[in-house]
Length: 77
Image (cartoon, rainbow, N blue to C red):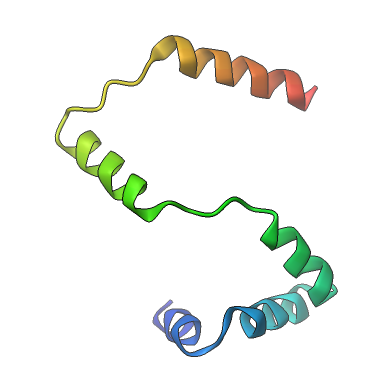
């Protein structure tokens, strides 16, 4: 795992995608296109949420969670 993390630090994103594509046996351009469709990660929001969870201050809205689970289930059918 340490070796992988060092590679991440040293190689630009495009090169990492090419290596991953070769490993998976897929076209690098197609893989890059799929990866680029993922939403950006908001690291500060994740850190904030993690702090709230660890501090016992996070109160999820059970109605909203259940609505999203049902919506996801319907999309999978």
